[in-house]
Amino acid sequence: PVAAGAPIANKLEDLARETSIDAGQALTTNQGVKIADHQNTLKAGLRGPALLEDQLFREKLTAFDHERIPERVVHARGAAAHGVFESYASLSQLTKASFLASAGKKTPVFVRFSTVAGSKGSADTARDVRGFAVKFYTDEGNYDLVGNNIPVFFIQDAIKFPDLIHAAKPEADREIPQASTAHDTFWDFISLMPESTHMVMWIMSDRAIPRAYQMMEGFGVHTFRMINAQGTSRFVKFHWKPLKGVHGLAWDEAQKLAGKDPDFHRRDLADAIVAKDFPEWELGVQVVEEADATRFGFDLLDATKLIPEELVPVRPIGKMTLNRNPDNYFAETEQVAFHTGNLVPGIDVTDDPLLQGRMFSYVDTQLTRLGGPNFHEIPINRPLCPFHNLQRDGFHRQTIAKGRVNYEPSSIDVPPIQEVPPSRGGFASYPEPISGNKVRHRSETFADHYSQATLFWQSQTKPEQQHIVEALQFELGKVSVPAVRLRMLSNLVNVDRDLAARVAAVLGVPVPPASPRVGNRKYAPSPALSMIARGNP
Ligand code: HEM
Image (cartoon, rainbow, N blue to C red; front, top):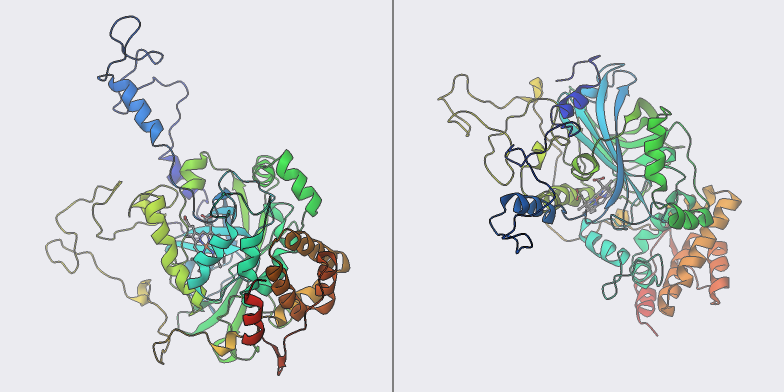
């Protein structure tokens, strides 16, 4: 375990035990047998044919034939770095998480930034959300904060995630990415999902074309819980604030860079670390007492909403510095497995229906991507503290578990392996009271899809607003289905009439009427309006 003030190199030392350097070594087979000829296959006669018995050739080609693993279904393109998180002060009043328990406590981290929609070989500067995933190797086990660079999300319920991603990925027939030709499927889906409007405003803004990974904010997005040693739970939102400030590219720059330097962001990250100009962020939390959960006029469990910082200021709790590049892209950046369920005592999830779905999805996909249930043993994923889980066997098992007992309770080994009560560091889910009927339902408190989109529009400077207008003109100009454009405009007019008018002018269509307001809320288009809009002319 990493103790307070312990040298921060511990995860690096842990990885170093797995690192091999080939330079200067004898070339061998997988079995360690030295190879005398690495240039020629074994042949019958001087000019062949080659012999099936050539075990050296077959071993080499077999390894090569199986080099590729599936890319991530989303966030396939990424770049990562090692670093350290240092806590500013004891946060024990809020959480019993030990990595936040004292001032100056250092915890090793591994951070992967990514784009969402593109394939592993796509360009860094595409207009997209950026993933911002942090693995803290704490002394109580790994804690993953799997966030994005935009504080809200497109959808409210995880059951829509496959639809969102199918619509955003290349179209099913030609596999041509959205960015280069038609944008029909993405905007078709979005136009029918008014809940995505707030996120669409962010995605059309300069936030979606960052200048550098080190110049992006990061957000946990969902509302999480922090629980202290007394068992008091409070709601928290996580924020990463880059110390170099938040900067974007101009759209024209982003497009040119996509051709001239598709590795623009990963190069910047690696170069900054080589130059010791280390990327740094402050981690902050917005804290809401459970009793205040309903005072905001929106639902804290709705991932399409943020808590305005004017209402609840962000309290800085620590600093993260990225100070070492990975040695091997595949072993570290590609094989790292993040999961919203990698929690430590003192941090827990809420009932946010998007987060609840993520609690299933990550490990499920990693079982395929990383080939079976033992990927927690891969060096980059392995916790720094010891782990003993009684699991056995499965593909790619590394640990040699010694002894007869792999069950609990047991009495043969003395002392036996035991569970640990929460008072001594065992994880226990927060005992949230639950009641109600089992239903497929969206809460009425999730219904306002436009107020915060308007707030975002109004928060932008004139040039920033112009960038949003131009992005929408460009994007919707690429949509070939008139009904989809019209439906998008009938969503945008609920955000701001001037915005919709400026986009409509370029598309050459009239501005549709706004939806009726109900009280202070701006609701989704009435069912009648969306029924009409659904019928494509
Ligand atoms: C990656 C699912 C929403 C952030 C992934 C992966 C899946 C997934 C399957 C690939 C993981 C892998 O292969 O290792 C989902 C589902 C969502 C959802 C089902 C909603 C229901 C979100 C949201 C965020 C987010 C709201 C941000 C708050 C990320 C990040 C990665 C990722 C950062 C990349 C992790 C890495 O760098 O390896 N997601 N996701 N996802 N997701 Fe989500």
